[in-house]
Image (tube, rainbow, N blue to C red; front, side, top):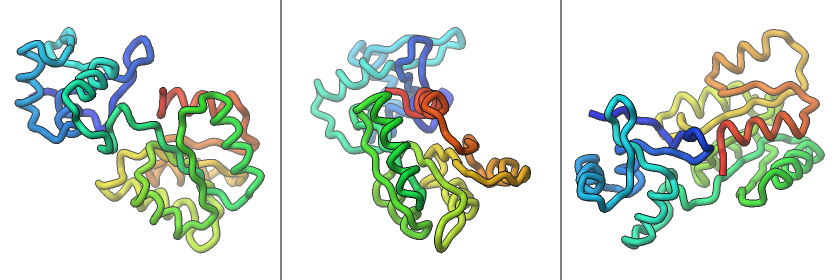
Length: 202
């Protein structure tokens, strides 16, 4: 059985690459059906040195459009990447939105300032990436991160913690809660660019 990745990964040239399991989940078919499509030449793919089939994003998008597969599945490569900003500082939210849009306008961005609302919005909107401040009203960022990463429905969402805390233990605590990355404020354009390229390339 071919290996599974939770969401498409980037290939050598920056294009996202999908396993047959990824494609099956996105198209809502069995993995066997995807392998059949590939072996019959209906879906363009290549083989890794280990013999696993891999599908590039362009080929998958063309296949889905050609066969009228509706858009909407969270992993659908035709869907714009979604970024949720969770921070109660309006200036920080504004700055992050500016940095993100200046890198690429093809992101859907939402924000919330309340910890409790963040959990609800994640479940409703299914973002690909969450920028999460640690100090929030109602619920702290550590608990939100732990909850997202501990739930199979949201565990694949990338969580990047942002904080102005100088407590040396904050980073280790955040990573222990499952955060993908820890960024210390003040944030820079270069820091945000690196995060976008790593987790939500377009």
